[in-house]
Every structure is written in structure tokens, then in C-alpha cells.
Amino acid sequence: MRSVRVYHRLAGLVGALLLAGVALPPGGAARAAPGSLADRLAATVTGAGVHRHLAALQHIADASGGDRGYNRVGFTRSARYVSTVLRAAGYQVVEQTVPYTDFDIATERLRIDGAGGDVPVLMTRFTPSTPAEGIEAPVAAPIDGRTGCDPADYAGVDAAGAIVVLARAACGYTHQQQVAAGLGARGVLLYHATPSPENSYRFHAFTPEAFTIPTASVAQRDGETLARAARGDGARVHLTLRARAVARTTVNVLAETNGGDPDNVVLLGAHLDSVPEAPGINDNAAMAATVLQVALALASRQHAVTNKVRFAWWGAEEMINVGSGHYVAALSGDERRRIAAVLNGELIASPNHGRFVWDPGAGGGHVLADLFAGYFDRRGLPYERTGPESVGSDHLAFEAVGIPTGGIDGGNVQVKTPAQQARFGGQAGQMFDHCYHQRCDRLDNLNRRALDANVPAVAWVLGRLAEDVRDVRAAIAAGPDRQIAYPPVRD
Image (cartoon, rainbow, N blue to C red; front, side, top):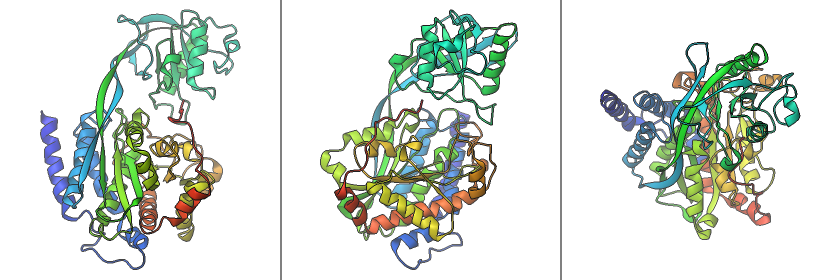
């Protein structure tokens, strides 16, 4: 009960401050920026303005158990915050109900026999449960750096009846589990090897029918400790994983300009949810707050835009693009054709930041990539082009049906190379965001310089498309955008 009262006090205080001036540039009253709509938006939509929304979303997470997870009260409060601010700015807001199947985890526990205490463990979504009493078994692990991608990797190792410990490998953890199960293993413990070995990442079964034994993940340091013990004097563990599939609903928050050509819709969106394990400020409140700030900057001139602009805050992206996938599936053929372009973004203020522009190499998506690239070139900001599927996110639902998509990200668990350090600064050999899906994904870990540079870029490209989408439409007419399989496999 106390947390609810705290939330309402914080929301009231933050809301009053933001509603009083959130759409204004730093320094007081709104000032007209010269030039095109794109230039005006880039001048008035700033990292400082976005940061005020991020402070509100951090407060919401703190008052909601520490997260804004897609199936938690923190997400509900985040959606309410966005809807309230939009309505105060004069937008008509639609909260689209989205049904989905959740994975309700009741128990996830790992105890090392004789060691005392539990090891943190995260059950892989949509994989089998253990019996209610759990599984007690020896630990086994491949030797000599082998990955477990082939049965031969277990030469000299007795996997039958054991719980196998594996580092995530290039063949994919679905295949690793299948190999272990084929050798008679009773369960699998995975870990993701990174320069931050204390981190834990929950995995997702993209093909649940391929998983036949209980599967979970541990931090790298715990996984390596277990693997060493298995190769030495041996170790036994007691693993209990209990969960079930549950039908739930989430929401997409939608708003659009009153004016603009309805046959040329430009959609700017971002997912609003976090994983249940983190506040989700870089992933992905930073982009969600940018979308909100752009909408507020456009509110006073929404009757005068050339093309209709639609804003979206997607639900349950962390359950693999649930909200955006439902939205796209519900569109008629005519409604899809009216969408000229979709813009998205992820992790735009990563602590050890990079700057990646999504480019399919052809079609309307390539035109959108050139718009971002041109903006960055004119300002001397470094970037790299990458395929749009390099980041699993909501734009992929649109790209899968041939709608041009574009966007940027700042990097997540990939490790920065020396060449990227020379290009972007920061530290080679470390992840772009060591707080990705971790408790430390908080406001104080954002890279403010990256936020300040990337926020106006999103606003500029949106403003440019709100005025003119002829080049994007021409690229579509020249040949359909490359289509990809959906949902993307991020195993």
C-alpha cells in the first residue's frame, strides 16, 4: 500500500512539473526555430526535455518494485503517464488492447549441494518445468572449450542423468539443449559470456516444442564455477523450475496528428516496457521518452503537417514484439499501404555508446537510413550502418510485411572493438551497455552526450518525413523492400 501512495505522490509532483513546461526548450518560453519543420523540431526536441520524462519513468520504476516490466504495475503506470501527458497536450489517445500468452514463473531456484545458499537462476521462457520437488543431479560440462553444439563435444563426459552447464554458443541454445537432451541430460543451465561476468540474462524459447528438458540461465561467473567443479571433484545441484503459460493482455498507446494526409502516414514508435528484471531506462525508456517529446513539440502544429504523423508506444516488446506484431496483424491491406514509413529506436543512450543506423541496403528503408546518415554527416557525428535485423525490435513486424522502416540504436551486449573505440570513444573490450536487462539500467547510467546527440536526430528525420515522403514512396515503387522472417530468432 505504501508503494502505491509513493507512486501517486511522485506522479503528481513530476506530472505537475512536466505538464507545466515539458514541451518547451531549455530556458523558458517556446522560441520559433528557423527553417523547415525538421529543423524546428531538431532545435526544440532536446536531450534535456527527454530527460525530464526519463526522471518520471525512473520514479515509476522505483515505486513499482524496481521495474516497468511488460506484465507488471510499472508498465501500467508508464502507459498511464504517457497517455496523461498526451491528452494534456491535446491529442486523442487510443489504448489498444493486445492479447498475448505470458509465462508465469512460480519458482526458479538453484541450490549447490554442500555449498550453502542458493545461486540466482532465471528460467528460460516457455521451456518445461521440473517436477514440483525439483531435480537433484550431478553437474556435467563439456571439456577443452567445447560448446555442446555436437554430441562429440561430450566425449569423456557423462551427460546422462546430469544437469549440463553450457556457455551460449553460435549454434544457438535451442540446438545446445537438443544435443544435451539427446544424450540423456535432465536439465540445462546456460550462461552468456560477456566482459561483465556478474550479469544474468533470461533467455526465451522461440520454438518451445524444441525444448524437452528444463532450461534456465545463470551468471557467467556462477556457470563457470559450476563447470569447473563438474570437471574437477564433481558437484551436485538441486534445480526447481516451475511455470505455466497464462493468457494476458497488454496495451499499445497510440496517438496521431489531427492534420496531415491520411494516405501518407509516418509512424514513430518505441516500446514502453522493460524486462521484469530491470527499470529499463536505456532499454527502452530513452527512445519512448523521445517519441513523447517529439509528439509534444508537434502538438501545437498538428493541424498543419503535410503528412499524418502517428505515435506509438508498444507493449510487451520484451516478450518478442507482442504489441507491434498485434498492431500490424490487425491492419487491413489498405491501412498498411497508407503507412509510408516507420521509425523506431533502441538503447539510444548506451553508457559505452556506439551509433548504429539500420540500413537494409535497398528500398524505402535505405532512403530512411540515408536521412539519418545525412543528419549525422552534417553534424560530424560518427555512425555505422547495420542491418535492421541486427536489433530485435518492433520495426521488424512492419518490415516483415514490406513497410519501410528506419531507426538507430546505441548498442547493447555486443563488445566494442578498438576501431569502434577510435570512432565513438568509450572503452574497447566492454559491452556497449553493460546494464542491458540488468538492475543497473537506471537514469544515472545513461550516456547524456549520446542522448543529447541522438534525440534531435530522431526529431529531424520525423519532421522531414512529416513534410515529404515522395522519395520513400518512389523507392517502394521501384521495388519492394526486402522482407524477413518474423518473428526474428534471437537465440
